[in-house]
Structures are given as C-alpha cells and as structure tokens.
Image (cartoon, rainbow, N blue to C red):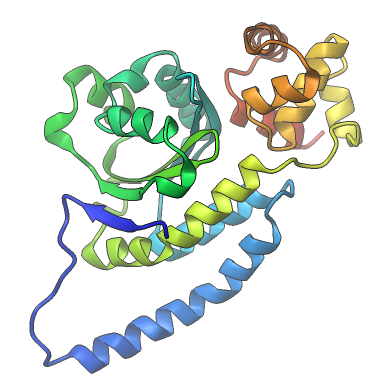
Length: 279
C-alpha cells in the first residue's frame, strides 16, 4: 500500500472542546468538494483534465499557481502544466527556467531522483511543505520573488517509469497555506496522486483528431513537429511521445525546440494556451 505523509509539518491538534464542531465543519467542506472531485475523475485522459484539476485545487485550498513536472528514470524532466491565475505568461517562463537546470537546486530534487528510480509499488508519495532554509538565494529569487509567491506545497508522486511532481503555490494575495489547507491537501493526496498518475501515464486520444484551431496554429510546422505537438497536446510527456513516434528522446527534444521557436512559445502550457486561444 502506498503511504502518504506530511513532511516538516505537524497537523496533530490537542484538546476536544470543539472536536465535534470541527469534525462536522470538515464533513461539510468535503461535501462541497465532491462535485469538483467527480468532474475531475471523469476528465482523466481527456483534454479538459488540467482545467478541472486546477478548479478543484483552487476551490479546495485557494491556489494561485500550479506546476506539474515529469521526471524520467534517466533524469530528464518535462513541464506538463504551468498555470498562474494572475500572471499566466509568468508561469510559463518560470517553468522554462526550472526545467533548463534550476530544478537541480530544488530541495526536493534528491528525493524525486530517488523516487523516479524506484518501482512504483515500493515507493512513498510524500506531501512536502516549503523548505525556505534549503533554498539557494538564486532558486528563491528566480521562482518566488518576481511573481510574489510566499508559500509552496509539493506532492512527489511515484510512477511506473519515473515520477511526477505537483507544486501548489500561494502568493501575497491569499498568504501562506493554513493548517486547515494542509490538512485538506493531506486528505486529497491519494486522490491527486492517482489522478495525475493515470492521466499522464496512460495513452491519451490519438493525435490525428485535431480541431480547426489546432490545425491553423500548427500549419507552419513540419510533419514531425506537428505530430509531436499533437501528442503533447493530448497529454503525453516528451518521453511517451518519443515512444509513440518511434524516435529517440533527443530527437523529440530537437523537434520540440524547433516547433516552440516557430510558434513563439517556451513550454507545453504555452502550446496549450495558444491552441485554445480565441481565433
């Protein structure tokens, strides 16, 4: 059985004067989340999964930014989702900075590397709170200072081939995550791990089924570049797209770089936003 734990944060509470009242309040709050949870489950392996996941997390704990990264066994990293409600383009840029090398300064990097190299069945998915003392000045200034982010909670998710890394942020508008927020995330952790693992690991719909907007946006690309972008739009990671296209991972990196340069985007989230923009 996969275990879930809060690291560096104690959620235990003493006293029982308001225990029944607190328990009833928590039940009501969980009841309010159930429709969003159901919608999110139904969206797994579909194009609207990420928007439903963001809606659930925003409703549950008021996130202001969300990032999801995929770590491969070989040590490669790919940005799967970058979203900031107030500064969408900033999230895209931060993700690019992170995957370009700053991820090695992440306090969770060592654990994620170890997690990616272990079989899923023997790994532990861990919810971790922000570790300010473990962050280098460069890491914090690049990823937290400009977008005015003040707190972060991460979920390290074991997978069959690698690991997934969910990062949730709060900024100056809402302030740090509260103990109630962390308690809620701790309860959601098994569900979030399962949903993210299933959505990004399983084979999405065939990329040939593109809509008119996608066809227009990707028209300037070569055939291989277009195929790669379509797989990425359907939820594949760069690694699984390489497998589908039967080409080397390094080749997909080259195709992605060329395609993104032609389209004027820097990450997958930018590609998704471009293809979903109004004509």
